[in-house]
Amino acid sequence: MSAALSRTMEIRKHVVETDRGVVAAQHRQAAEAGAEALRAGGDAVDAAVACSFVLGVLEPWMSGPAGGGAALHWRADTGRAHALNFGMRAPASLRIEDFPLSGEGLAGDLFPWDRVVEDRNVLGAKAVAVPALVDGLEAAHRRWGRLPWAELVAPAIAAARRGLAIDWYAALIIASATRDLASDADAAALFLTDGQWPRSFSWAADSDDRLDQSRMADSLDILAREGAKALHGGDLGAALARDVRDKGGYLGLDDLAGNRARFETPLAVPYRDALFHVMPGLTAGPTFARAMAGLAGETLSGPDEACPAYARALIAAYRDRLSGMGADGEISAAPGSTTHFSVVDRDGNMVAHTQTLLSLFGARVVSPSTGLLLNNGIMWFDPVQGRPNSLGPDRPCLMNVCPALGHAGGRRFALGAAGGRKIVGAVTQIASFLTDFGMDLEAAFAQPRIDVSGTDRIVVDDRLPGRICDALKAVAPVTVTRKSILPYPFACPSGVLQEGSMRSGMTEPTSAWGDAVAEQG
Image (cartoon, rainbow, N blue to C red; front, side):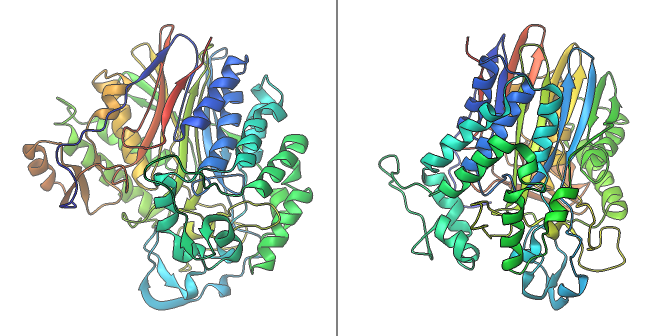
């Protein structure tokens, strides 16, 4: 825990309540775009499309059209949950022999894999996996959307034409990756000054420096007019694939045409008097289910006192995950590149949606023809062969995303988080706060949490009492830390909740840009 951080500062957010719809996202302007779609008569799905595209413009280092993810949809008219997987996969022409181990120990990004020569699975075009985000948005819109697709993409186009304003938060994020961004000429031209320095900003006033996202705006305009087919088999996809190959990667037009979103049967997770729905397959959904099953056998007397039970349940869940789904043990200090938003509309339809580039700034490579920052989904694979999640061509990527739907005590909610392997622990604890202790969203998001991102360590919020830390030390070694605006020692959740005719939304209190926005009359 940094000795320089204030011990008296408090950071709070208030829950947003309405009898209409609400969008909770990691960027306020993206949430506003979603809320405006609701005001125009749109479904929760319409709000999700608008919110997602704006996030890709205003949080370009977190997600975008060249990424992937997953979402849970709740349809109030049928009382059914639907899982939508738009995850990434390895290109078919990927060559395992291009990723030799360097013998230099562990890689230094999100996962402690054996290091690959030149970090090719982390940085550069060879790290780029096949995206599917846009197809996922279109698949949901085609099924449930009410507003025209082009109208929903329009706010993102307008935002890209203006360009992202460089405030203190954006400047710090860019500065954190300057060295890697400088290694790609197109990324340097977009994010840096003179190709080598972080973008600057004024401490005294709003910055007049903006990213030139005009090429991205042109690509979004194509997607608005042509839909996902432009990227998955059309000219836009051909340009993207050509750029990746020109930079030494594997992405092909056939890869883009073949990696499409798919609806799946969600995992139903009963828990005491509650029922959750999460993603199946190569996601954190099964890990959440395992953690909740372990927690169901515990006696919880209060949210603080429950921390040792949370730790035991999560450690057991991660033990199963690491042995059966792949040893994706994350380096906790590394920044992830994920965003989550949740939506509820006035009819009670809900969306819990997580999208990602994987690492912060993904592969740190920009496609010059499309203006899109590229993912580094290949890093999800273990470069050592013969393991559950070993690298290989045309294989689906293991994701840490954990969008969730829940129902308990007459209340229904949509929830998720950003933060790599920190995600499932945050979702598990907030789900318990809402169901075991009947908290509202504001109390649940303000409640101090622990983080368990593996099997050997517990990170503890220093607001928890000393007796809780002592109890946790009996479970596993403890590291105490203080929540801060940047960096994030814990995941960043966003959620919405419906109780009767009232709906509420909340985002992580320490998230500088995140906010919930209500539909206006």
